[in-house]
Amino acid sequence: MPVRFLAAAGLTTFLTACAASLAAQVEPQTAPLQPEEASGYTEKPGWATRHFAVAAAHPLATDAGYKILKAGGSAIDAAIAVQMVLGLVEPQSSGIGGGSFLLHHDGQRNMTEAFDGRETAPAAANENLFLNPDGKPVGFYEGVVGGRAVGVPGTVQMLEDAHRQHGKLPWAQLFAPAIALAEQGFKVSERLHSLLVSDVYLKKDPVAAAYFYDAAGLPWPVGHLLKNPELASVFKRIARGGSKALMTGDIAQAIVDKVRQHPSNPGQLALADLADYQAKKREPLCHDYRVAPRDYRICGMPPPSSGAITIGQMLGLLTHTPAQAMPLMDGLPDARWLHLYTEASRLAFADRDQYIADPDFVQAPGGHWMSLLEPGYLAERARLIGPLRMTTAAAGTPGAVKTSYAPMPEQPEHGTSHISIVDADGNALAMTSTIENAFGSRQMVKGFLLNNELTDFSFTPRDAQGRPVANRVEPGKRPRSSMAPTLVFDKVNGELMMSGGSPGGALIIHYTAKLLYGTLNWELDAQQAINLPNFGSLNGMTLLEDQRFPAATVQSLRQPGAQVREVPMTSGLQAIQRTPSGWFGGADPRREGIVQGD
Ligand code: GLY
Image (cartoon, rainbow, N blue to C red; front, side):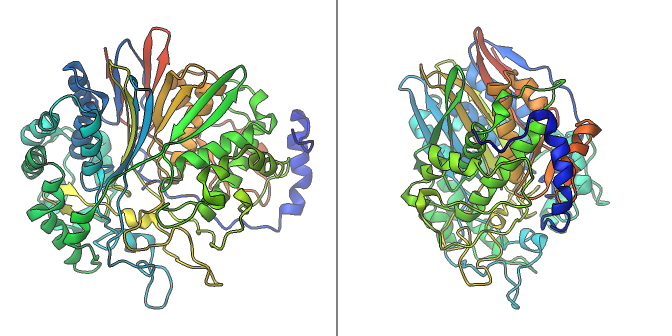
C-alpha cells in the first residue's frame, strides 16, 4: 500500500494546506451534459423472486419479458420482447434504429458470451465527418440532429444471432407484445412527456412531430393513448423476415432516404452499409476482484466498449488504496473514500481516452486489452493516488508500449436503457441498448427513431501534432461506447451472483461501478446500492449528485483548483442479484423501471 496516504482524519486538513499550490491550475472540463433529463425520484421497494426475474426501464417492457419467461421462454427470448416494447414506450433511449451490447451466461454449459450489436460508420464516412470546412469541429448538436451521425443499426441482428443460439420460443412470438401495444396504444408516461416538453429538436422532423406532438405542437399529455401502427407493421415484417426485413428492401431504403435527404445535415449511409452489417461475437472481458474473504469474477463487454475496462481499472486501483477498509458513514460514502474513488477515476479515464476504440481498427496496448488491467500496472498507477487531488491525469503505458495516439478530448455521450434477466434454467443476461442522444438523431422513419451513435466518435480526429485519436471516425468502424452490461460470478464455484448495468453516457461507468462497489464491498442489496447517490469524475472536476451529499462532504472535497460540481446524475440502473432463496432485483428510483418475476 502506498505510504503517501495521510491518516484518515488528517486528509481534509492536508488538502486545505495544499490548496494554495493548486490555485493557479484551471480545470479544462465542464460538467457533462445529462444524457437524458431528470424526471423525478420515486422510491422503489426492490423485488424478491424465486425462479426468474426481469428488470427493465419501463413497466410495460418488464411485463412483456415476464410473460415470455412465464411461458417458458429463455432469457434471450425475454430480452427480445423487452427490447421491442422499450423501443415503443421508451423511444427516447433505445430501439430497432440503434445498437446494443449483450452479455449472456449459459447456465447449463457455464459459458459466457459477448454479443456486439454496435452501430458502424458508413463506408463513405471519414475522419472529417464532424469537421467544418475550416477544420474546426462542429457544435455537438450540429452533429447530432439530422442524418450525419446515423450509424448502421445493429440491435435487431444482434438479437437474432443470440436467439439463434439461445432462443427457446419462436422468434415471431417474441414480437407479439410490442405489436399489440403499438396497435392498441400505450399511455404516454411522465418521463416521456417531460422529455418531449424539454426537447427542442424532435418536432423539427415533421414525421416525429406528427407522432409525438398534437396539431398545436404540444407534446401528448401524460396518459394519452399513443398508437404506432407503422411500427407495428415494421415489427410484423421483422417477426416474419428477421433482421433482413429491416436491413434490406423498402425499410432500409426509407432509412437511407431519411439520412441522405435531410435538408440541412445529410449523412452518407447507403443501402450497402445496411445490407453488409455484421453483428459480432466477442470474448467477454473478465477480471478477478477480491473483497476478502470472497473472490469474484466480473465480466463485461470488451472494446469497442470502454465500460468493463474502465470499471475494472477503477476497482483494481482502489484495491491498492485504503478505500477497501472504508465503510459507508451514515449510509453514504464519505469525503475520504470519494477522494480515492475520483482519483482512481481520473487515472482510468485518462487511459480510456488514450487507448480504447474499435478493436478491429486499433491495437490494444501490448497486444491485449487485459494489459490495462494487469495487476502490476494497476499497482504502479495507484502510486499516483495521494492526498492531493490531481487536476487531470495523463494516460499510463500499459503493456510497456508507448502509444502513437492522441488522447480523445472530452465530449458529451448520451442515453441508453439497461435490461437484466435471469431465467428459470439458470441462463442470465445483461444488455445495454442505445440510440445515443435522447430521441437519437430526431429522425423518425416508419414509426421508429434513428440513432446518432456516430457522435460517440471523437469529433476531433487528430491533435495539434497530427497524431490520430484512436476513436476517430473511419469507414465501417464502431464508435467507442461506455455501455457496461455486467455479470458478476463467484470465482470459487462459478455461480452467477449478479447481472446489472445502466444508461448515462460516460457516467454509465460510474453508475455501474457504484452498483458493484455497493453490493460487493459495502454488502448492500441491489436496491440499496442503486439508491446510493451518484458520484464520479471524467478526469476533471469531481461530480456529485445534486443535493444528495451532506454539505460537509462537498466542502471537504471542494478546494481551489479542484472543482466539485453538484449536478443531476440521472442513472437508470437495473440489477438482479442472487440471494439464498432465489433472486432480488432493484430498479433505479431516478427512472421508471421495475422488476418482475416468480
Ligand atoms: N451512446 C452511449 C454509449 O454507447 O456509451
